[in-house]
Image (cartoon, rainbow, N blue to C red; front, side, top):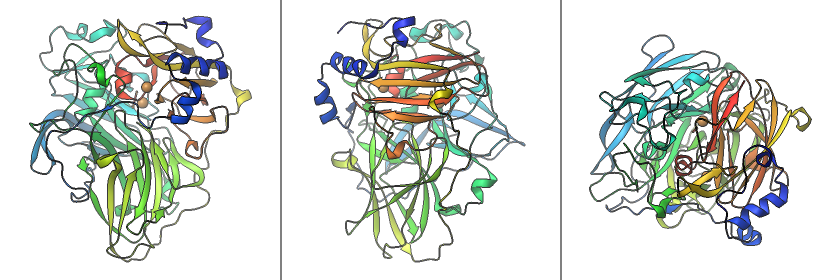
Length: 526
Ligand code: C2O
Ligand code: CU
Ligand code: CU
């Protein structure tokens, strides 16, 4: 396989189409039919915990605390180490936002800007990105816009293979991130985005949720209060000393990025956490719940089903995607969930007898990773919530002919700095290169093609899926997305509009290991 068979410029924008898709698959050494038929359920290698794991459905589901403002529209978060008991009786050192994993949930309203001051008391530089946020470039968490901890040697020069980035805005100890929140109501999440070291930083605990709401959504009558649950799903593994296992080349995360060769396709854990608890259980009313599901795993994909103890599968009624409400609900029995995707789902426990149980299971898991969490139905109740047939009314109506530009990007394995890497259009990430330059307000169609699983994410903007594998989008592609799950050998087309802010943004694969190993590119809006 040639190290790079697509250059810059012309060939980069070459229409890949089916021929390109075949070429990419052929280059990975799989035949197309084998790739499509087998469609392996995972891309990555699983770590095995060296401590005894608890039985499932014993630990109560935690719900992250809602962060209190320190002033009108102002929040403060300290990034610091803490020791937490994730597995019962096992102390685990974490890197956290404000001492908890997940970090505190930030509750916000559409169109009301907030500023979050982050203070870095961790031993390494950090960067905060609000995933799904419609955010000015200066607050978007560009990977070289580091917040240095006290006493970091060499300052901004010290940051891995990207070298010195003259455009980086590096601060010491603290940084204010200002979010305009001029966007549709949605579940967003904030996480670390440091160049070359994002995957291990998220793994150690640097992830939290942020919710944007508005009056129109509040008025729909959806399940609310205790019947609305944010669920951050993430897999982890534990070393013999109780610490989080992770195959970093340099476990200090100071100098050398990357993971050991065996894990280059992605790191999977053998423990499934929901809101930081292993295979938790939640006591629920026999009523409708709104589950706001986020896959915060580095590389693990899920295919969720909700199963009662007598073997019935409950409907998962999707009301929202990454970027907010669908126009109308979509009913799923199986819900595929790639890293960084969010699904807003209504589940109705009304038919489940008191004392009964509903398990959320992952059809792509094996052994212990088949279980995710359970609901124990504790009481019969009244339910005045509803799922209206019309949900969001403000979805963008971009059509193919609106597109000023059509671009093509391949996502696949390659070499970076002489080692295994992951490339977009044949190139590893370079902060100095503008991969896409586009004009503010332009509509574009992007054609994406993958060798293995690549959940592709765009900063700043939401998009709609136009096609998948040459056919229509799948049911779970509905609505406004910011992350699309490309499966092995698959191509897809998305349409978007680069709206709101000029400056330097990103698009990348959200398999966090791929992202650290080159699979990221610049999006320059002029
Ligand atoms: Cu979840 Cu570049 O982000
Ligand atoms: Cu993002
Ligand atoms: Cu990838």
